[in-house]
Image (tube, rainbow over all chains, first blue to last red; front, side, top):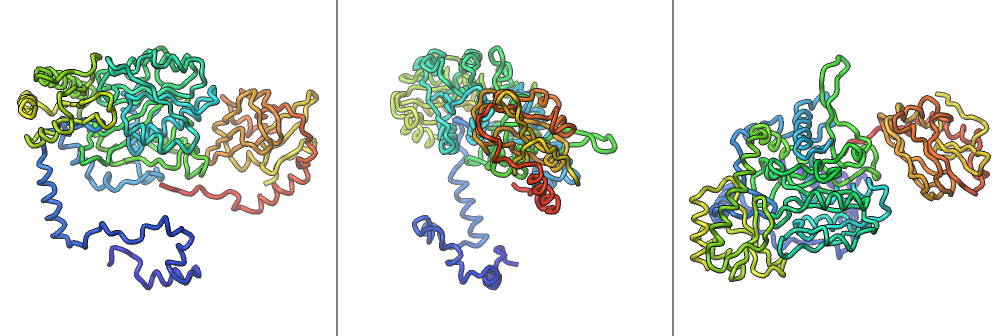
Amino acid sequence: MPFIPHTPDDVRAMLAAIGAPSLEALFDEIPPTLRIGELPALPEALNERQVARLLEERAADYSRPLCFLGAGAYEHHIPAAVWDIAGRGEFYSAYTPYQPEASQGTLQVLYEYQSMMAGLTAMAVSNASLYDGGSALAEALLMAVRANRKSKSKRILVPRTLHPLYRRAARAIVHNQGLELVELPYDPRGGHTPVEALAPYAGQDIAALVIPQPNFFGVLEEADALTDWAHRQQALAVAVVNPTALAVLAPPGEWGEAGADIVCGDGQPFGAPLSSGGPYFGFLCCRQEWVRQIPGRLVGRTVDLDGKPGFTLTLQAREQHIRRSKATSNICTNQGLMVTAATLYLALLGPHGLEQVAAASHANTRALVERLTRTPGVSLAFDRPVFHEAVLKLPRPAGEVLDGLLAHGVLGGFDLSGEYPELGDALLVCATETKDAEDLRRYTEALAEVL
Amino acid sequence: MSSHIPADLRYTESHEWVRANDDGTVTVGITDHAQHLLGDLVFVEIPEIGRPVAAAESCAVVESVKAASDVFSPLDGVIVEVNEALGDDPELINHDPYGEGWIFRLKTSASLENLLEAAAYEAIALAEDEDESSLANPRLAD
């Protein structure tokens, strides 16, 4: 059986059935300028043995450097049981479980996931996940504008300390829907968004304020003060958080006097390997009062006709299979397999285990910074507390330094000069719980040699 | 299915009813026929008081166990009162669509003359009853 099910005979029969003379005629309404035509960059076809060899060689090229790179995706230890269980056929092939009578296992996993995320964020509701952190932020902003009926504007304040890719992804998704994203400057000494930076917007009609915690520099924002400012302006507070950090930081539901309204972020630290960038998953949680504005699947617990507990999708009138074009979102699906891994990861670690991961990552990053800044010319860029990342100022361009470190088998961090040229030669470093004293020593020695 | 269609009200093709009040306002709800089609209501999203609305503009949402539908303003006007009781008890619309289940009150200077009379609305409701496809099954999607 061919992998592509349409034989030339099939195609001819289908064209004849709809009265189109050729495939070309069928697609002729697409302007030629939009057609890609040939794909010249595609190499000749390879057979299975050749493909396996090519990929093995490429994998060897990567040579698994010692990783101190964070910037939104983090290397954490994943207990072997996580993917051993998540890889079972019952989970691996699961799709959106519309039929509760056939999907109790998948539904229960999603329900457990939602319960854990709601607990971690101190929110009443979590959806069953979204694509990734950036698209989760975009959905959170669209949701905030729908939910905030006190605001007539679609203006949202977004700190420059928020992950640059999240800002770009959110803008790409929301700018044609009339949302205006206004960037807030950061404090050059603290690397955070001071409440004073919001002063020019006081009294204006603002739909929401985004609060990253920790921010892209690893720095802790004044989450309580920012949340209270938003609420005084009748704006919603949208938290973008690292989920591991929630084990040691105040959950967004407890920020300020009333807590954040919507919480989103990337779930990758919970059981998803780095894998050159994905797949990861996004999470989205909210207060009870906004539940009808949250997009995506929601699983609820209920009882069947015999009174036995069971699980089912709930509040489906928000969704596209019921509300069509007026659904809360038509571009959201959930990342069921990644969420299964995250649920297993959290269940295996437990609250105390997650707290140990967060605390060890924080301690390792502090130790790394302490060692690296002993190197002449290397200093800490900001004076505010950090979670498990920090910005270092270097005496030479960060790109050059990173190339040099890689030659020593060290992936040294993220070069900030592209996204934040005003910081000069600046490097974002991260040391999670996967690093030990010997690893920190290796980085420190390699840096001294490179400089 | 035969539904109740009071003769003293006006109607829209999108299943709202309109009652003219003495004070230059009109009261709006959804018809008995509409609540039958929707089934048990579980949530009503009511508009903000003070909101200006145009005729045929969506200004409320009724959600049942099997569907969610927009409620459209029948006339140009401004929302002056909403039925807060629907927040706790959306089934008021099922039990008493023309009374306790009213949705909002509109201040308007528009004439009701162009809205449907009971007989014309009844013809629409009957035609829908015969056409089962008006209750399309929800389609599953990714």
